[in-house]
Image (tube, rainbow, N blue to C red; front, side, top):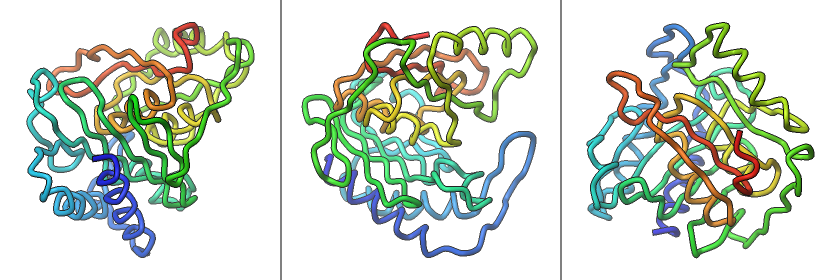
Length: 245
């Protein structure tokens, strides 16, 4: 399944490198949807179909009750970093994770703008471009780098922004890259040490959860409690629990 996820993410990413046009389907609020997202997910679903495993995807949805059942399912983000993709900003990926309930099994994240494929799973290890890798994480939080971001349903109230600043202050540096999946891949690979994002969707992070576990990291999440969004979570992943915010 790890090899299958890697191969699928790579093929989908390579396909996207050949697409020059960007067709905007919707541009409401802080979110943008492209026709390329839809077509990429259709392509990925076709590749995953031979496994006979159900799929939950950003564009075409899926059975949200799978998170509470003992059944494996694929979780797909066909383009993570869509606005980066629209504007030509590096840091765009295809993210494919296999989960059972809320337990990550394997994940593959292919940043096709840098030709970097991150993959792994608990008990399997961490791989970058199919080569085993070991993260060199910071030893203390005052030397640690935290990755974060503001997803489209972010609460920008003064109270929430003040709480956000307070959470970030104990870290050496704060970084945002515009892709939750890549942010988690960078934590797994040791380029950063912690990831924290509120109201993030499962398809953005499912593969990253498996890869962080493969690297020996930890994570925790809770429902974001948003009406009509059962797959939205408040999530942290880190080298160790002491780096949680």
